[in-house]
Image 1 (cartoon, one colour):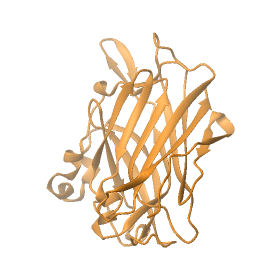
Image 2: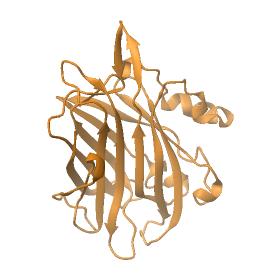
Image 3: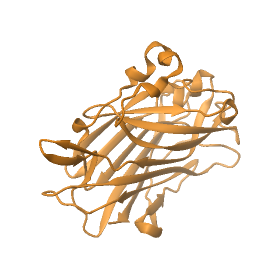
Image 4: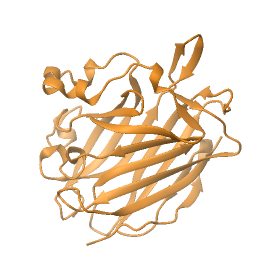
Length: 266
C-alpha cells in the first residue's frame, strides 16, 4: 500500500501576488494557491473581496494517476464570510426529484452562486494505472446557509467525461467556519465524485481545479456586507491546503494527508 506522507511545502512566488506551493513525496504531489483580490480591510472595517482558488496534482508514481481524494481542507488568513445575508441553495434543493427533471442547479435562486470554475480529472480503475479517461467538469458552488456550501458538477457534453452526464454525481455539502481570523473551508469528497466517480466503479483522480469566488455584496441593516470580506492583511496572506486520499473502493482507510502551505501578497 502506497502512503501519502505529511510533507513540508516549498513556496514559489508568482505574478499578481499569487503563491504556489507543492508537497514533495511519492506517490502523489499536490499544489495549490489562494489569491484574494480587493482591499485589505481591517477587523474594524472589513472589505468585500473576490478570491481565486487553484488546486492541482503535481506528479505521481510513474505510470499512475493520483489516488482519489476524500477531503480537501483549506484555510485562508484574514477572511470572514457573511453567508447569512445571502440567498441559499442546498444540495437537497438541487437533487430533489431527480434533479427536478433535469433543471438541477437551475432551481437555485439568484444571488446564491458564490463561486464557479472548472475541474479536470482522470477516470481510472482502482489500480490507478494512467492515463485514464479525461473528465472535464464545470463546478458551481452555492451558499448553503450559515456554515455550509453546496457543490455541484455539470457536464456540457457526454464526450467530456467518458459518457457521463450532469447528475451522475449528486450535489453535496461542504462546510465553512471561522477559526480566529482564518476562513476555513472543508470539502469532503463523496463516493460519486471520488472513489466511485459517477457511480460507474471508477476512481476520479483530480488533475486541476480553478475556482473563482465572487465579490458579492448584500445590504442588511443599512450596512453593506460581502460574502467574503478581508479583515486585514499586512505583508502577505497565509494559506494552507490539506489533501486526504484513499486507494480503497470504499473510501476507507485513507492513505494519509499531504499539506500545502504558502502565502500571497496583499
